Length: 147
View (cartoon, one colour):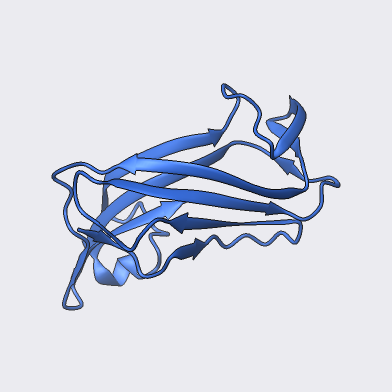
C-alpha cells in the first residue's frame, strides 16, 4: 500500500511568474492500481517566461530513515536505493504543443502563455510493489511524485 500525507504536493520553485502544484487523486493506493493525478501550472505573466519539457516522475526509495528525511537529496549515498522509477513527459519535443506554450522551440524552450493549465497523468503501479512504511527510527520505504 502506497500512501501520501496530503492532497497536494507543492513543488518548491522560486519564480514569481509561475507556480505549479501536483494534485493526487487520493491518499492511499495498493499494488496494481493506477495512481491518477494532475499537474496544475499557473503562469501569471507571458512576458519573457519560457517553458521547456514538463516531466512527472514517480520514484520509490528504500533506506535508512535518517537519510530519507532529507527528502532524497543525496541519491548517491549507499544508504538509499531507488527500486521504482517511472516518468511521463507531459510537454516535450516529440509531442504536440500544449496550450501552455506558443511559437517555435528555441534553445530548448518555448514562449509561455499566461493562464492556468492542467496536465493529467496516470501511473500504473506494479502489482508486487512494497508498502510505504517506517520501522522505528531505522528503516523506511517511501514514494515521491515530482515534476
